[in-house]
Image (cartoon, rainbow, N blue to C red):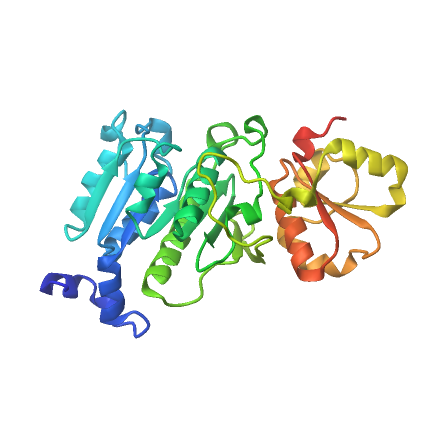
Length: 353
């Protein structure tokens, strides 16, 4: 039951017929676990606490650093060198005293993942490394928990909902993690400060819709946003194999990686049957102009508009900088057209010239 002050506090969203009192009660009863209290976690936490989600857990073992302040908007200079999870809890308690905030000042690892996640209804992943992303996804799959996912890179962001009612998971989009040294993080490559705010708001919106059972979720879809040119695209994700419980400590091996080829395979194809290969570089034009191995350049966000030019009788190979965007391109092309599309594993970074 909502208290009188809560009815006043949430009035503007409760008068929405799609949400109403019933939806607000669902929000109050919900238990949400936020992985990471950084750039993505800050806006997600603020909006979910403001919306009245009843219980929110925060998992983060990091300390506030001065370099965080341009994008991690919960924190101030006085918070530097303090645990993010604890500082976030203090400030969120001030924002809404009707929400229970639980701080876990630890890193989520294989040893504690199931225990942490099993206590919550919805998991939101705002982590910044592949090890955590795969662990969280695999644990959610094993425990049948829906997962709201977001990621950021320079000016680009991604949002999706995984493991929802038998829908695709993170591994259906990215079957295996790239080598750690192939994908730079924000500290190495940079990120525009407003981007995690934009993507984090999308993530919070998906979580609210999921909890209340309203609207159309990004389940089976990947939303991508480019803050430089304001382009927004939504790609379909299909589950390549039935969703099965998986180990939370061992990687999943399946034929879902069959659409990836390494540089040696690509060179062999190029040497033996060059006329049978159609190479498409899905990086931005400036990246392609700076360095490429040939082929044509169609940025990922423009791919759908040019899908009709792909020849059905050739091996369609996509390439990008690290192999991540090309995986999206290959899966999207296979789903929409049925053309045998491949992704060059590791991308330009792993290509041995």
